[in-house]
Image: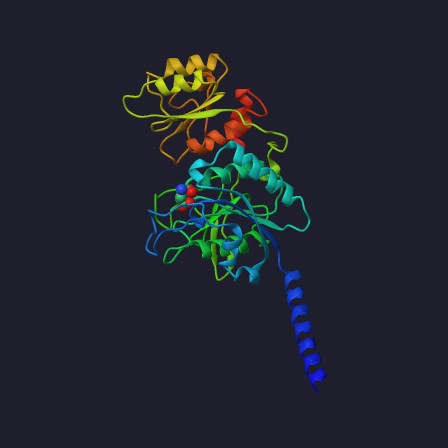
Length: 356
Ligand code: DGL
């Protein structure tokens, strides 16, 4: 009698295990690469939300364990690629992250990647990866505006959304994506628009790609620019990126910072000018001098939206400058850095700013 009872319990367990295995077989395999940030942050009290917490404290396994619902949408496993507040993100970290992403996506048992990241430089990492990932599989970057210990922490739902997006067929071929606050942005255009609110990530004017609602992604548009596997940028054998710095335009500007960057060996300068990328007269001699030394100059704008027109506020043909199109200064720096790994020809580089 007892044997029959145990045997039937064994059979039930066997069926449950088989059902779980079958379900797992139908779910996408998503790898979560953790880099730090507020999503991994902790505060002294549950009301320590916007300020006063410490970023980059919680490990990837704890982040995954905090969201058991992940198992319903994907087979997930985590790797702690680094543990930093994202204001400390740098070229070496980008190269390490990008190489790991490309290696994983080349594996047939990986369907998508989620990267947990501090929000301060998500927009830069997203565009960098948008240019150097060599796969059409989804790569989704996610962060949080409140630490994991806070009341109504946004990290868990953002992570859940990111994993289901990274495992979705809809996200294939859309370039690197950023999701927080149930919204989907393109890596090329997303930017942080508020220092502390949950809805800080936007693509002003050009708009979101879509939303996540009821555990499903809804896309309404996609970027027209080439990305990921369709770009010529290959970082797999690089261990260093060219030095490109940014100077910010303002009334009463002077060339001190610009001259210092050039003296320190910058191979490219992004000039984030006022308005349509206008140049204060005080910096034009230094910019032309830098150009003569072979430094590539890109005219961007501090405004943040709109096209910086070639030969608009400066004679770019005569000065041999490049214009940034719609890229803000921090994203223009990324494209110029990668462009300089291929060429110093300003005509070729200008084409890249109009293509990626
Ligand atoms: N230190 C900032 C960072 O890691 C915190 C902001 C955040 O992650 O939301 O980007």
